[in-house]
Length: 236
Ligand code: CTP
Ligand code: CA
Figure 1 (spheres, helix red, strand yellow):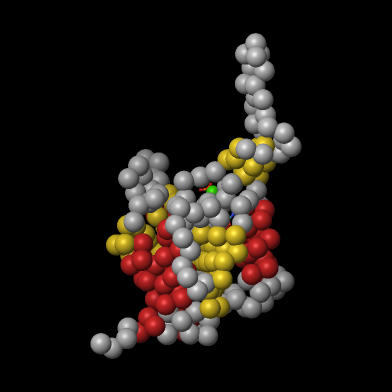
Figure 2 (tube, rainbow, N blue to C red):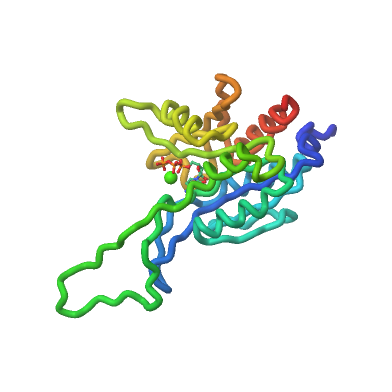
């Protein structure tokens, strides 16, 4: 059978994909985390590799194994992710930020396990501080030319509507705010998005008002995204 065009459309390109969730430690045994399974990011890394790209997966905490044959760089916290992304994007054509990054981390890391005190009715209050916005800082670094290459920067957004604003409207606002080239918007609810094997996304672009819809297995969605990325790179 003839090979699909997907087998070479990213030939010669270097792609960095971030996937999975970050964990922000509180003490040696506890952390703040999130429900990201890493499945969609891993599917994207696989699809990029099948399309011929040289792929690095910057992997947070995931429920799935990374694909064979891609370079893996494991991270845990948002700050580690930021450092890894800035190191890995050197000479990279495409960055795909599928990782679920904690917006906040505990202000203090306790070196010893936090204990409850018998007879003390008070519960501790955890103070949080903001994590860096990695996607935004990468976009800024490209603007200021402190990093080279990076023809395409792709962000992800899991959105729910709020009764006034639809998930897509939130997505459009986020695309502008982040300044990335493509934003993959995922409508999340109790049954959609997290941990499942299927997905339904709308891909917004800063260059056109056309919206690309993709749905099916996470591999199907990954292939649609990779195809769009390949088209976009040709136009650049
Ligand atoms: N992201 C990032 N650094 C962060 C938070 C998010 O790089 N500290 C990236 C994510 O990997 C994703 C994109 O930014 O590609 C959008 O993440 P999202 O959480 O939807 O955006 P936020 O700006 O954090 O907005 P919200 O308040 O809706 O969480
Ligand atoms: Ca966020």
